Length: 181
Image 1: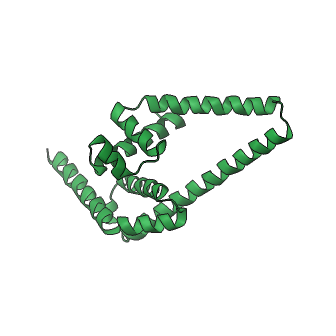
Image 2: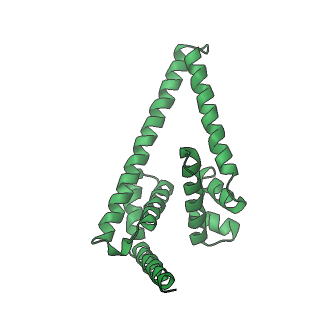
Image 3: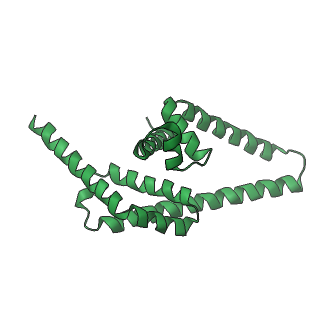
């Protein structure tokens, strides 16, 4: 009984620390990320991922400089996102260049196409495993590029619930696509 009470107090402290960080720093974090990424939607996604990382920590309330940790986490996530985008852009440019050089399909490009199709099928299958509301929120955010407030209004749920569904969806997809249990 005592352990359960201690665990609940710890969770409450963690929640209060994250809530306080969100209230105190979210608008400046979004401005910071938007300047870096030039896309407010990407900035929202990165910020959400940064908060999610903090949520997974054992004791975020004990950080000496929580704001610096939050911003550094977000900066690292943004940098990773930009690297990934550059790789994708490079890949797309190389595929287009390859197609321009050789209008017929060779074995290598056929294999790349098949591998890309297989990867897309894996992603789609993982998305289909999500609960309906969670899948709808994820699709509206990622495929339809709607903001959290737009999704909230359209589905009649709070922005916080939109964020929770997206965290759940992203966590599910990471596990499904990485092969983790």
